[in-house]
Image (cartoon, rainbow, N blue to C red; front, side, top):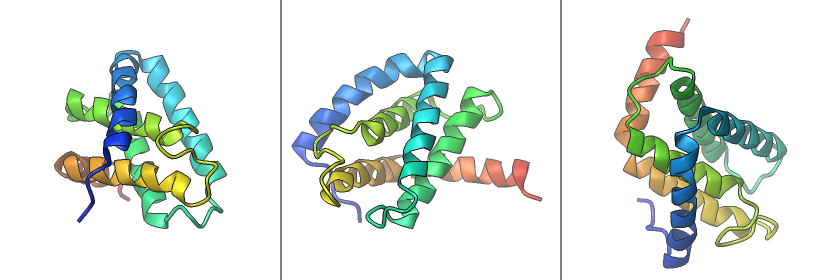
Length: 138
């Protein structure tokens, strides 16, 4: 079971949540966020401190947001989109509750937030996976 984020992690996350509302309402900002996410994922591919499952989760979330932005996927609740964008902002930011330049620990807080969000929006993620398999499987 995922642990609840600490008060410090929640404080930083809430700052990103406020920014996420603005980004969700601007498709160009959302596209820019997805580019930054891809860059960070590409840069961390060889980093053993990021577990494969976390990277796969972020790729799933990235596809979900991309397909929402381009209009292909229409079933993501607005609140889910805001919270996921806030989580992505938290992940991308080099300075959050635990700065990313601190080995291992720098990604631990990112993982805590992302796992917590995954748990909160599990049903939305499962619905997207079902939609993705129906629309993109060979």
